[in-house]
Image (cartoon, rainbow, N blue to C red; front, side, top):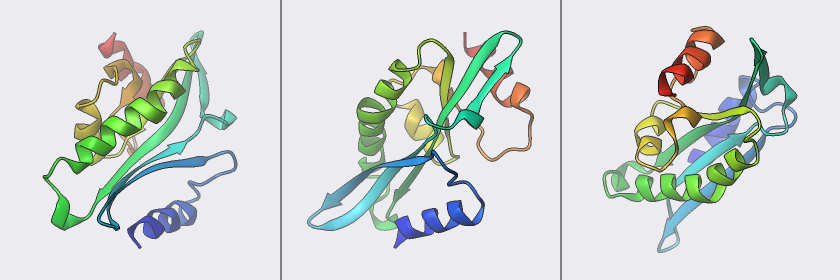
Length: 145
């Protein structure tokens, strides 16, 4: 059920637009879903490419995590984060070395993704904020260089 709610919210807020793919890693123990890591993959969306002062920036996706409350603080989310980075995000970033590519983490996902090997230059830590693209992405990424 928890997975359904995220898709319902994304659809309601017009966030599952044409070209968005959902890539998900689910963790089961004894046939029980304990949690999942989800990347809204924007790789095919041209509206996620921004040209600013001669530099091309490409938003490759938005990261979400859900772990069932009873199973939090047991390392499951960290396992999911590592798998998401190694199996999905790292190859995705590698395909876009010709632009300044990045993924954005939701609030819950930030500390989990910071524990992976993702370079800071490829991880935006402000999702759903009202700040401008220049503040949220460009200025932040320049600080990471």
